[in-house]
Length: 131
Image (cartoon, rainbow, N blue to C red; front, side, top):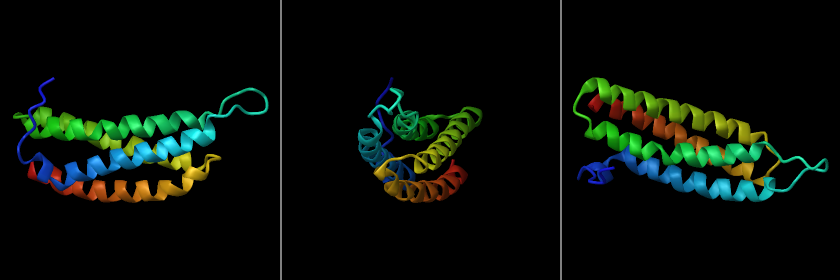
């Protein structure tokens, strides 16, 4: 993979917001996974623990899609990256809603992440118009 980032990328608000979301989702996931890592009384594990990993994975994939869309020269390929970014954002938001129903005290921090995702979506819409 080519790691030469476009020089204007760190200045993009959407890229900075994606980096904030990555840090926030990692922190929340760590907090939640500590609560959900214990086995239930019947020896089964809590299925919500997987959603905490999903939010980290999906948020980590936001920035590379932004980079790929910025680098792409052809509009068809740009649109594919934009569609992936939209899907990632939607999945991330739905996994936040799922985790809000979990039995973790870390779920109280999920509205902060959802608020960041809402502002990311607004930035995403305006950024998409510039490509």
